[in-house]
Image 1 (cartoon, rainbow, N blue to C red):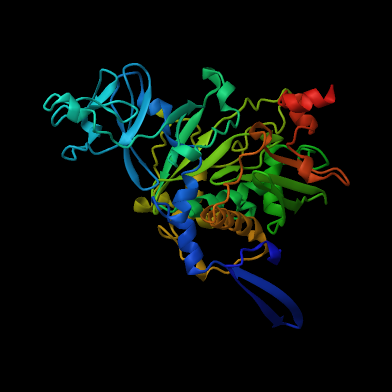
Image 2 (image 1 turned 30 degrees about the vertical axis):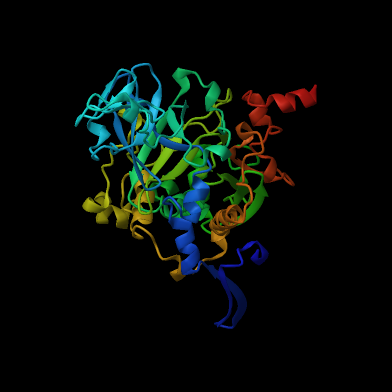
Length: 469
């Protein structure tokens, strides 16, 4: 464990003696310097330079509407930008302020394959070239360019690359490139806290045994699925409640890592939830029997972020593992679909996340009636950027420690002239999974191309198919 921790992290051992029990415990926390390294994302910062080497979600495709529709504001990695779908259908992502006198191009006219400033009519195409300057000579216009970033639409998301042109990395296809329009689903949620802080909740399997619990779980009948194989979603809730101290195992991968949260079921079986982390900000959270849905935590700036979720492949399995939807037995009101994909939050710090103190005492652990807002409550309540040098981490935090270490190591490697990680591999093979293990079954094989559930769903890669034949 300790050899996996960044050398810059502070480590200490504590000797405990209480009620005759003697044990050693290790504690790991970030230094103030490492906390700054992780959370600061502006241009020129070490983390900002790393994140700019990846194709990054800028906005939802639905926000741009049809060719010629109104532009939208985009704030990304601390930069104020404007996105628009020009009259030819090409997507532009350019600096917000006109280089003439600084007026916002958000108020500009989307016309003639360009965005035209409302102040003096200067017009810029998606590449940032000034294509019209009515008040000045053409020779002057030819010398004016604005900051513009390349874009790529895939899976309902408009992606952009903000790094150096000479090192532009290939677009990472998680499976969205071949999705039909009917299968595209993408949403985004604004959250007023740092991106790492928000993301850590998705790689923390222990919190589901507390934050998301409700008393009616005890009344869920045993449906007979507490046995090796795939349980029902309803029984999964019971497992989380039954074993509130999961054992974690982490395995490094070419894309980052995957880890298992291991719990004992009421019948004494071994239940695992396998979650994946992809450098730098993507997570796939465990689901029965597996999932390829991505949750991405994209920095707006140092203090805020967007939580994107998008479908990458058709996960529908013919056997309908898991039965009813995960939220069917829960007393939570969690909408799954939103008009335009932009989540309109109803539970915020301003209204105390609509916490019901009576319900907190009698029916639900958190007192917050919206499932996702339970996560937002705890991560946002830490403040915009929590001082992690104050933390006291335990054994259920090893996946968070590993994620932080990978990011810090990647930043340091790039600063030393090295390559950015997580670009060599088949991204469509990355999946999260959940199952009750057979005796001697290896959780590391769940959700891979050799998993029978994956093969049944027809998601095996062409590479593996070729090897099999």
